[in-house]
Image 1 (cartoon, helix red, strand yellow):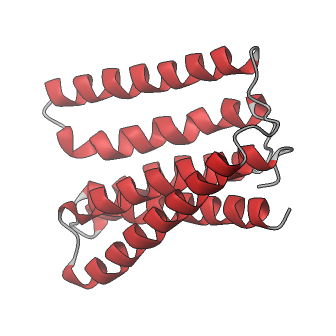
Image 2 (image 1 turned 120 degrees about the vertical axis):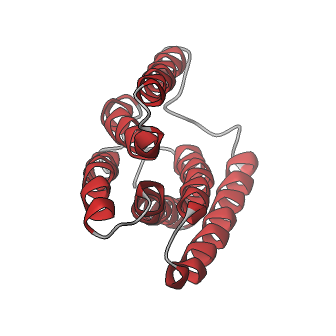
Length: 177
């Protein structure tokens, strides 16, 4: 990931580990039985990544960070927009009786929001995560339909590993400084 500050790398590992765990969990909504072990292992590895990143973040909380008095509010606005778009889209999907697409919509919003976050936090590698999550969110709908699978299972089974890999890279970056 190579953010400028160790604290930011640790924070990225913690956040990505936590959300990877959530996506692996969502993938367990109705997956094929043969996916369950991999999804559970992914959940555990994601949780461990979140804890390790969180502990490292706590240990280096007083260190430098790109998130300062100027960047912090902008980051908050980006996250607020992300939540608003995710919620609005889910409301529209629910009204149209397409709740099955909510996971794909949320993953798409998450992926797209990583593009400005990468610029704001000065972590260019987040563009790769952004592109992969955005593509996975759209492709998952087609894969799920073609194979008669739950969209949430496919979205979670693709988004979880992307976030876990990104979190592990951030953790490795933080640990090797």
